[in-house]
Amino acid sequence: MTEHTKDGITPAKSMETGLTRRSVGFATAGLLATAAGASMLAAEEKHEHGQSHGASEHNSGTSHKALIQSALHCVNEGEVCLNHCMNLLGAGDTSLKDCMRTVAVMLPMCVTLARVAAMDAKRLKEIAAVCIDICKDCEDECRKHEKHHAECKACAESCAACIVECKKVTDA
Image (cartoon, rainbow, N blue to C red; front, side):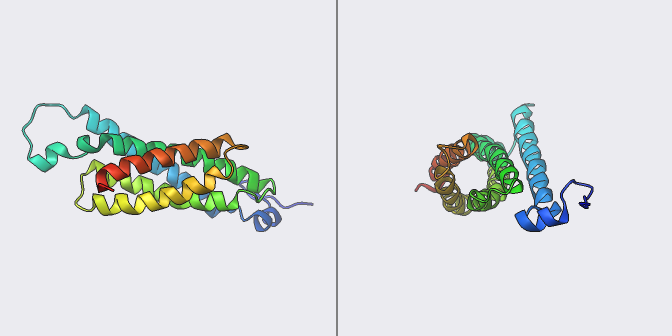
């Protein structure tokens, strides 16, 4: 008789694939962060009540709208790619394990980038520079699988677009 847990993952299968409640929890946290980032952007777009603000308040977010959208698009595509990788891993296919790792690193970086850009934080250039490297790693790994996995292709393309927007901020 096979023992099943509440989430349907057997202890043997969990050990075999590396898929745990914790990894599923991280993916869920990423989705929540994506929703928070999207609501930040929506709130920024609605902020047109005519009050006079200081220069830095007035420019917060709106001057980096393309960067914010690009970062959030990267997060959205990355979540889909990560889910695809986890599903394959859960079925015993380990061919995308490196892809899954790079996407898992990219996701919180792009969430952070979106938030820092929305706030026009003083360390935006430094965060964008690091994000370029992380997105490049993710893009490179996803490109290895793009011919057979549309999710990887979409993630790679969103990372490439985010890199372009980051370079505009870093003047690279």
